[in-house]
Image 1 (tube, rainbow, N blue to C red):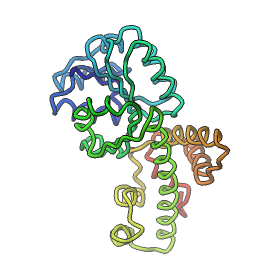
Image 2: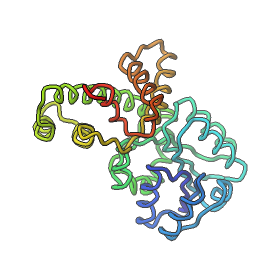
Image 3: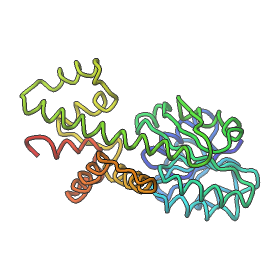
Length: 286
């Protein structure tokens, strides 16, 4: 199997590194050329100047980029040159509708498609411990499982194309609620004059403990919001969730509130900060 990866952002770079360590990565492409050249040299793999060049060299193409439009543009770009019986795996976070469209485009050339968004943040991408939710043909997943396992500690088959993205939407909605709860609770703790380090230690060990509190609680209480997961990206994801909910006439109260809050942060110029920057809107001193 020859594997190529398109997209070397915060998540993609960690994925590429783990694939290369496992001896599975042949080539990379990234819109920002400098980053791709530097990483390809570091990993001793091929740097491709275009997505078409990459598609012509491999038979498994992994995609990790930002938006629905970007994903469909990449699919349409590589479709004319991709080898028959190749496999494309999209690990971006997009709508289930986009996943279904991408699969249909590639099916014309007898190319299989899996939607396989991930959860676990930049830390998980670097450590190779991502959780991956996969939609598509189960036999195709079995075939490329070793490739995905180089990046993930948990790979769960969810069903037909689109179900991976639907599952990721659930994850993003839940992450919004957790962010609201943790930032509000820590702002309350701050107002009570509590020792934040001790507070986070004791609560993390109890029923209210969670990943976000453990990994972002102390940094946000210190006013540090270096991105693991950017506000602007979660905002984009939650807008997708809202659109999906509208299709079933469902209201997402917490999601709606979080979209409003994120928009306020983006308008303040904080879209590239970690989502824990929501704490800025809740603490007594902004």
